[in-house]
Length: 128
Image (tube, rainbow, N blue to C red):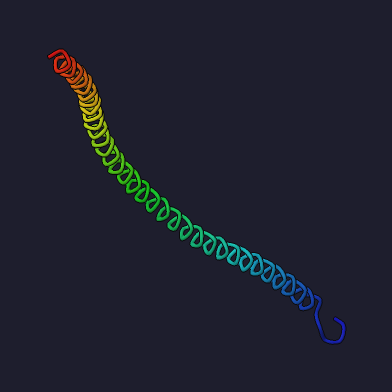
């Protein structure tokens, strides 16, 4: 026994210090592990929000795509109807053009006949 301190007492102090260091090391590991888990939870929540946002965007994209497809279908129908109307008008115009051509031909024939009749009349007058 030196200075009134027993060897067992000193050993107990050393053992106690080692035990405290081990406890502190274990506490530090637990604290680090908890901080790491908290970071993972925060990241997980952030990723859940990102996934929800992406799903909302995908839903909106799908809805917009459907709306655009419907708009295209309506425009295709309108274009088909306009094309039918144009075809009908073109057919009417073609029919009128043919009537005009016939009218011009008939007018030319009538003029030719009038000239011929006029010439015949002139000949008959001259012959009389």
